[in-house]
Each structure stands twice: as C-alpha cells, then as structure tokens.
Length: 290
Image 1 (cartoon, rainbow, N blue to C red):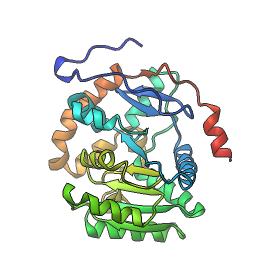
Image 2: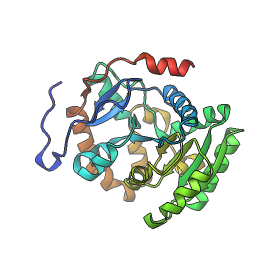
Image 3: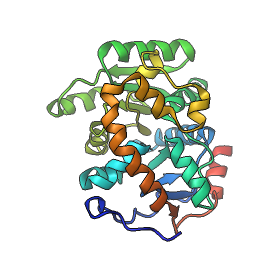
Image 4: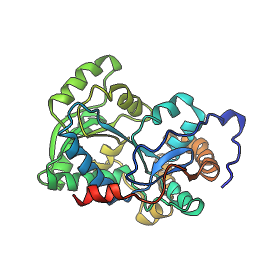
C-alpha cells in the first residue's frame, strides 16, 4: 500500500535494516520490523537458538523486543528510542492491534499476538521440558522473588539460576553483568520498564553471555498476580489497554491518550510487507524439526 506522510513533528523515520535472518517472514508494522510467528513458533525458536548458543559461547545473546502501541508511538516520536529499538534481533507482536493491521493491510499477516505476559509461560513450559536456564532481572525484590517462586512451582523442573531486582544504577551494571554471566543462563528476562530495559539490553549485549535476552516490562507482576489480565474477550478484541486504563486511570490516562491515536495512525500508514521477506522459509521449519 502507499504510505502516507507523517505530520512533521513525528517525521522520524528511516527504512528498517534488512531482515535479521531468512527463517521467517518479517513485515513492517507501524514502522517496526516485526516477525510473523505464532506463540508456539516463538517459544520453539527460543529453544533451538538457546541450545545452539551453548556451543557458541563467544556470541552475544539475541535481543528479543516486543512491539505494542507504546513502542510504535515512541519510535515515531523519539529518534534515540527508534535507534535503540532497531538493535533488536527479533521483534514480536505484543499488541493485538498490530495483528489486526497485519491481517488487513498485508498478505503476510502475523498469525497471532504473542503478548510477553503469555510468552513467559510458553517459554517456562518448554524450558522446563528441555532444561533451559532462566535469569530474572527487574521489578522490586519482593515481586522478583515471588515471580521466581510462582514460575518454579507452576513449571516443575524449570531452572531459575539467578534473579535480581531492577533497582540499580547504570554505574552498577558491570557488577550485575558479571553476576548474570556467572549463572550461565540461556534466557535473560529483563523487566526494567520502557525505555530503560531496551537501553540496558543494547548497552550490555556484547558483555552478556546467553542465548536470548527478552525484554518483558511489568511481566513479573503479571506472573505473581499483582497485575491482572483483561478478560479473554477484551484481549481478543484488542481492548486490553481499556481494561488496564480502568484499573489504573491516574497512571495510564495520558500515556494512552497520547500513544493510542498515534499508534493507530502509524499502523494504518506504516504497515507493509518488507521486500526482503516472503512466506515462512524452510530454514525455521528445518530447525524446529531437528
């Protein structure tokens, strides 16, 4: 489709880099290159690549970021944020609106939403079955500890080899990176809020040793039940933001009032199939079948 011009105050746009690999389709959603993967494919890709990373310990972890209305709007408004987000090795569709846009505006739709709050459970299940090692970074000490406990109890055999709250400064990151590396994790979950978690991931990528680094926002609080998910019908209709707004109007009103209209505009005008990508390639299918 023909892309409309952004208003001048939002015109921070450059074409995304070429597809990170040819293992799956990637399309432009609201200006962000986004992977066309189901939740099952995403979790199995995590398993395959983390197992491969164990034999290539000199490689940095792959950065896995989540695209939602907030990220789409910030990428258009803030050049520094967009540059940071562009460092992701894989961006998955955390928001239902992105899935809707891909279905109506492209011929390579995202098959389903992969909300990080769901994906952490998918990952924990397959991780427990195959011996993946998790490190949880972020939230308060209490929330972090409770999230580790809930995941361990829910998925027997899951190895949570380390955890640390998110209340630290950039000056402490050298020590924290060393602490994480000593635990030899396969997957590092980073829940430090936006944009801090993305900046931490990019800043420390080449010092961390793991297979995947997954940014996860307030995910640990959802794991513990401190934050509640919307009813399934609201999730399916793309109205989970409305449920959260009703529960936390003071904190979320201005965020949604500003980002939602802009995100919708961007999804309508900055969504298209990337010329470098196409239908799901055989490479991923072969890897997942191995």
